[in-house]
Length: 289
Length: 289
DNA sequence: GTTCCGCATGAATCGATAG
DNA sequence: ACTATCGATTCATGCGGAA
Image 1 (tube, each protein chain N blue to C red):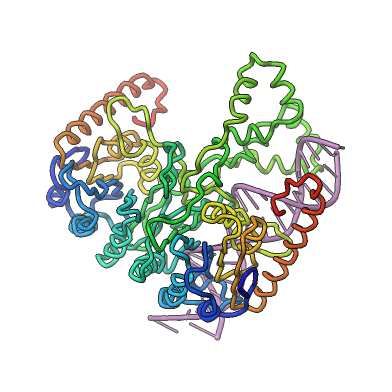
Image 2 (image 1 turned 120 degrees about the horizontal axis):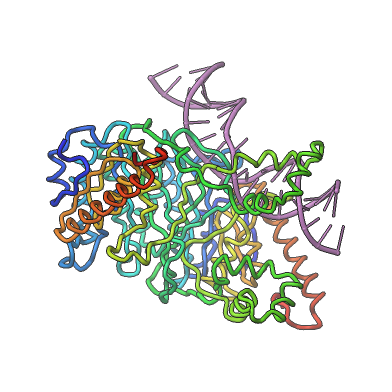
């Protein structure tokens, strides 16, 4: 299968023609937003966006397994003081194409770019639209459990050596008691609101979204060895996440620059994983083994 | 003007006929969500929702001032495993009616009830759709500024006595300079993501949203003495918020039970505000004076 | 060695000015 | 009149160097 663990150059609509029906477990992608990355991509106008997207989505529908999931990261831009409606229209059209609109996750970008305008505050969230072919799809909810609330998270992460000692000695103190309660049973299911910062200081590649974002959805909707497709792979974040998690990936991009960037990135990831597995090969607990 | 500071019983579509054109500064409302069980309280089926809503929205458009804003708190329910599309369709239809879809705020319900379903996590966000008649509307952004994030907060709170002295003595040091930048301007503009808990322990009335939610939008889009309309006023949360902030209100509900509840609530609010202003009448600094 | 601060920078948008 | 380009806006984050 020559499309496994590859970054391919081209329009996903054409490239996917070589991928068989019902072969992909998860499609996670963040297509170029309308008129946004004009220098790197063609720059699709908001008015044309739906027509531009639909034929590609038809291929996505074909290659996705019946139990698979399609997650679309997108946000409409402001045009003439209004939110443009192309995302809403896209959802309606995708349903006509046969997709089920199962859920809308919300990505809260904690560190959104500063500023305000006379009639508007800073936009700090994006949509993560979940589409499926059937009502019953694979979902591994236990894989994305999170520590109980931010309060516990903060406190636990700040537990220095001394704090832990104090915890054992001062059993009677509220603090000590409390912490010991959290340890061991501190995982709960998340909600459909995902709090993550945008990565802003990644030296070599500037990704549209942080590595954690595809990581979260790959854990949620696939198992090890499954195939993750990103038809607009950009700098390769989705592919890297898939590789790290022991899933197969297929990344496609029509920009030669991004194609190279993504390919270099997965090669580096591969190398890092190998080094790590060699380092830890004696204890046999390595994830990537 | 007999519609000022009143709770009125009836269908807002009819009741608003008595309200003049261009007289309302803010419409803030959370209409009854579409309900599959048609015969429970005012239930409207998802399929009929848009048609049910549009004639009312037409009246909203008429009574709203050109500089006014319409904020709609809504979230689509799940029907047959899918998010229903009536909210998307409603946005598109409202635009055809002449509304501008200026923004979509996100209400993150921080304390949403834990739990999950086989194919779905807990829903912990709702839409707050902002519509306007014109691109230029009143917006008082300074009224909703918030303390700066945890980072600066933590840092400022750690400013001990010695730190502040050091700040003044070591003027040349980068540290001193930086802190003096923060002091005095620890309020920043918020984003379009609003973090608020749902109210869980309100003795007498179970509101669909917390008092802070209308409070935030009333501060943002109106000045003192302006008129706030809630055409589905329910338990009266919007009216209470308006009253407390020194705005006029008009609340409408078609349910006699809710009508009574809301009316009792604003009477109690009125009484509380009077007591407070009497208590503080000597210093003359009372907001409600 | 640890903590603390400086700095660069990130899916943006508006209004004004120029072609 | 319509479109294109430019400057101003000003917070959270993580890294690196300084104390």
